[in-house]
View 1 (spheres, rainbow, N blue to C red):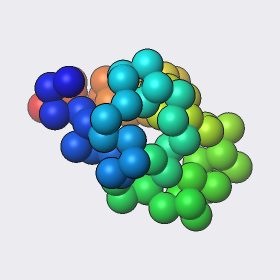
View 2: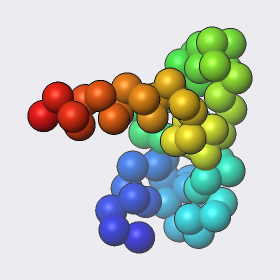
View 3: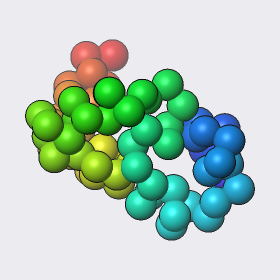
Length: 68
C-alpha cells in the first residue's frame, strides 16, 4: 500500500485500504482520542475519509503546495 499502513496504529496495519478510509481518525498514528474529539466537535470529522476530504484541509493543502 505504498507506506500507508505504517501511518496507522498496529491494529489497522493489515486492513485493506477501503477499511482504513472508514477507520476512526484516532486509528492514525499520533492522533489521540482527545484529538479525534476536537476534530469531531470542530469539523464533524469522524473517519479517515472525513479528514482526507474535509474542504478546509484541502484548501489549506492547496495553498501550502502553491506557496512552495
